[in-house]
Amino acid sequence: MPAPKGGNVTSFKKGGPPGPGRPPGPSRHILILKDALLLAAQTAGGGGPDGLHNYLARQAEANPTAFMAMLSKVIPLQPTGGDNGKIIVEVVTHFADEEPVTLIEHVPTIGDEG
Image (tube, rainbow, N blue to C red; front, side, top):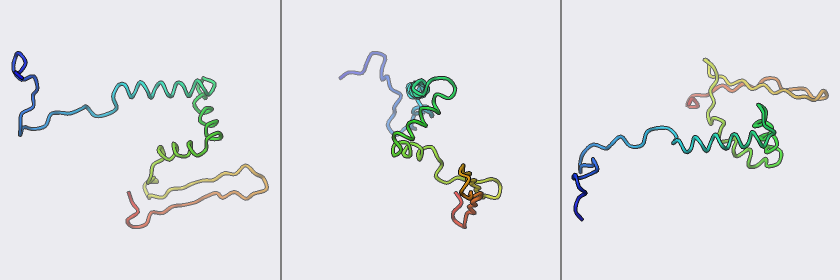
């Protein structure tokens, strides 16, 4: 098949350096879809500033397995603390007859640093 009029239309040259490729970051279509999903969830939760929270809270109760799977995707795998690397978790209970656990510390061991 003959080359199109004007010569070769691609800049590919055998053995040459690779081109710039696709720009980094999500495509415009992915960003539009993400915004639409967030807006739909906010609307399903009653709209307003608390709509998304309300929707996700209902989903956590109605579909805990799926909700926890989604939650595991957004929580970092290896969280780090402040300057000294400690992670402090404070657990607050709302029951008067139980003693709350107030502090749990995680001190990274050698080789545990991300």
